[in-house]
Image 1 (cartoon, rainbow, N blue to C red):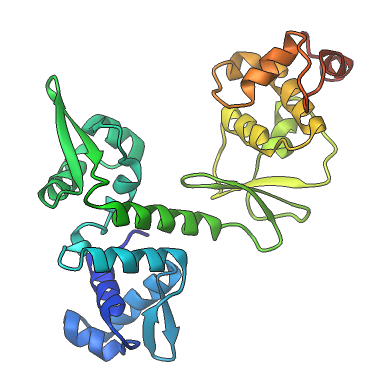
Image 2 (image 1 turned 45 degrees about the horizontal axis):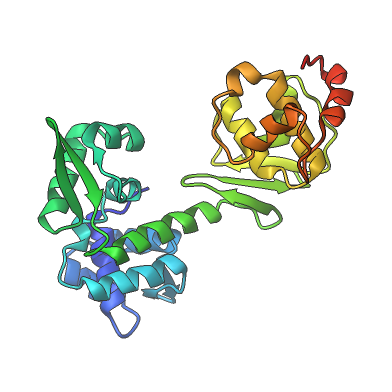
Length: 292
């Protein structure tokens, strides 16, 4: 759930306070009902931004909370509640040095263009973004010179939220912008992926570990393959990747991943350290009804 404007107002007050804040003090400053203040604090705790000390609340010691503190002291006079509320954090995460059009940002964020326009208009007023023109379209890019602490906070917040998805007994393999890839010997309430999903595409493997992703969702064959490439630490696992690629080449030919150049080179007969040989691959193709 995104931050509300009141969430950020409360967070600003807590960050600027030298002592833990009592809910009554927040209630007086924000002019909100006691129940609303309680919900705000609970939400900020869930986000990893605030921690409770009995009835009082103070800034947490998490990476995103520390990043927010730096943002607060760098832009204390700025309306942070209008910068970080609702879908603005998602938009900020997609903005970088490469200029993007409104349509491109709408496609990336899933936020309606009309809403994005309002967000971007507000960002322009305080210099969060820069705008250039290309033909009839405006392009927007993040202003790193004026707001580096803002970008640091958004990045830290998203990384923290993603990493919290990984169960304690699991091993993180990779964190992405909005998901995580991990493995565990134990079953997990998560979506099977990587080598654990190969059976759905005609390659059955005997695995010690289970490979998962969170949040739970339906995966494309391309996502499963990329997850397996990111999981392939051993030569045997790279062999599985090659076999999966050959079995489903028509759907995976366009995959852009650092390992793909080596996989294609091996299939041409090149010997690459850490990768299976063409002979290794040929020995397993009949098992999965694969033709080279």
